[in-house]
Amino acid sequence: MTGHWELWISAGTGPLEARRFVALLAERLARACEDAGLSLEAELRDSNDSPRSIGLRIRGDAERALDGWLGTHELVHDSRKARSGRHRGHRKRWFASVSLTPVCELRVEELDPRDVELRFARSGGPGGQHVNTSATAVQARHRPTGIAVRVSDSRSQAHNRELALARLCAKLGQREAASRRHHDRDQRARRFAVIRGRAIASWQIDGRHGLIVMATPATDD
Image 1 (tube, rainbow, N blue to C red):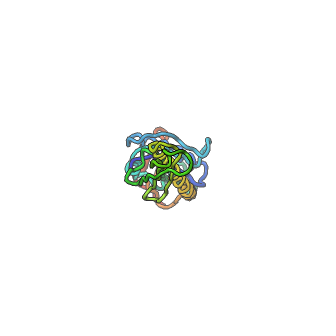
Image 2 (image 1 turned 90 degrees about the vertical axis):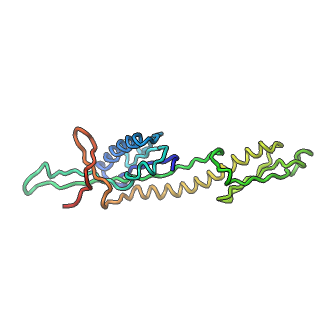
Image 3 (image 1 turned 90 degrees about the horizontal axis):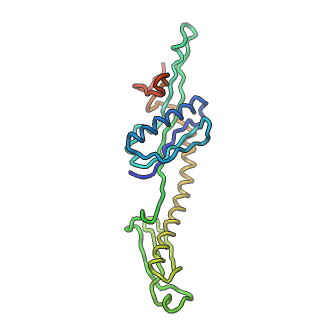
């Protein structure tokens, strides 16, 4: 589905190494978005120095383009290569999650006319003969949600219709904002609860090429 999205890369409550992994993974994802033809509009950080989470605001068919990126990623540092004998090192892992969230921004021109029921009636109250005898008042009802507004501010039916649609969008936006606040709380909880199970991709840091993906996820010895 084409639209606006926020792509979040998060280390949860992980240590500094995990936060560095977040920054490197965000760079790779930004390139992946560009390669997939997605528009990168903004970068969101929870802090300027070693952020735990980085968000990329993107536009396009992100669900399809980034499907293989969503889930838990792990960074593997095999410190055993630096030691030998009884004191061989061990494999260290740090985790980061990648999640995609839709951003709903409703404008009048984006309202589906089939979803809006318009009714016209006479305006009541003072205003003279024209206001009382002409059907200038407009009621706009959003069929899927049942949200409705009635506008009789102007003596012009066309102007009242314009105002009614704008106010209907505003009410739908308030409803969406309330839903989004609830969703954001869930998202924050998920970002801080990185799943440390089998990762969908394992990465290593190469001195020459930066972050490189391993052929298969790492497994415990």
